[in-house]
Amino acid sequence: MTTKNSDHVQSGQDTAESRRTFMRSVAAGTVGAGLSLGFNAASYAKVKDANDRVRVAVVGLRGMGWGHVQGYAGLENVEVAALCDVDENISAKRVKEMEEMGLPRPETHHDLRRVLDDPTIDAISVATPNHWHALAGFWAVQAGKHATLEKPGTHNYFEGQQLIKAAKRYDRLIQHHAERRTFKGYKAAMKFLHEGGLGEVYLAKGMCYKWRNTIKRKGPEPVPAGVHYDLWLGPAPKREFTRNRFHYNWHWHWDYGNGDIGNQGAHQVDIARWGLGVTLPTKISSMGGHFMFDDDQETPNTQMALFEFPSEQGGGDKKKIMQFEVRHWATNHEGGLGKGAGNNIGNLFYGSKGYMVIDGGGNWRTYMGKGREPGPSGSGGGNMFRNFVEAIRANDRSIMEGDIVEGHRSCALIHMANTSYRLGRTLDFDPGTERYIGDEEANAMLTRNYRSPYVIPEKF
Image 1: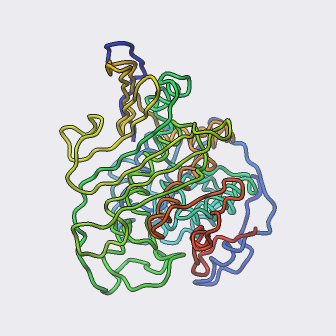
Image 2: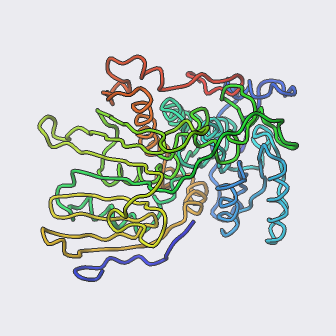
Image 3: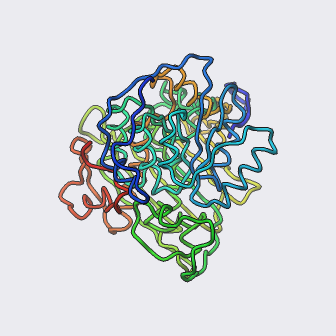
């Protein structure tokens, strides 16, 4: 997850304790009801000594989750003590790989609730499909654990609101695992922008141009042996098992994923908002479609979204504009990004003095004035896993990069764009009330219908 260790800026041509316990019976198949309704046990606070071992459970192991295991394995005095995946075949594979790496054999579970019932687990690291991220985080803090949630940390707007409340209520850390927040290159670029290096920054663009071939059509089939499919569905509606609703291709179904703007794009949306220095927009417009293919994909493979943010001074035309674009096939290399590769991933910022290009690894460069002369540039990686563990040891939210408050604001843009796309119209939003203005159909899409017992409650 880390990139180059350099951290330079060039000029000119250079380029407890008492643990929260379950309050309802742990009858088979019903234990989740206790979690989703909340606990009555007293809250606790635990300040860990800097030398204490931090025991982490990784939840979701097929793709990004294995990167989480490797990330923690490289940290001193941190143990991946448990693995959890609804596909027991993957869990068995990961245990073998951990043993081959010389790591302690972890406990294994297919049900997250069994992980949370373990008083020795300090935190969970969630890399499940998107529709499980927020529920896992909510249950974790209720159970007295900290949580880091893969991007996007939420599947809808309501979930971000509830995670912010839960982190405060249960006094636990919830991190939005958009790891670029820890990269020295991105931090230097943001510092340059916020200190006026580009002058008045009025437009930011995020790009996700990835070659995405058809997923074809795949009909219902029996659930594979070792897969706990009802658990995989969790809060989503009950549907028959198909390969296109399972490993990876879940990204392209609204019940589980958020399309590519919420997949790869979650990073670039976050960077664009960070660079502009804005929170929530007042106007959202998104359009696109699913071009070329006749297959099972529901989300667009080409999508354009525009967000308008109000002027800090109030009134006038000095607004901030953010643009995000998904392309799935042949495209150019905007800003010189992605040359020599099939994908074009990154951000562009435009200001009164010039423009900035940042690639997906935090390498940035600027072009100044009418002549577009090369200006300041920089690079440098980071480690989100280390930052999360340091925040746990210090019990200090202020040192944690990607706190859920910031995470919610960035994820909100993803959900707003998808709502505009699905409804086929521009939306007006009131950041004060956190509601769409005069559009109850859009307001209904701020949340979802949760399948019991996999429910994030409105009140807790």
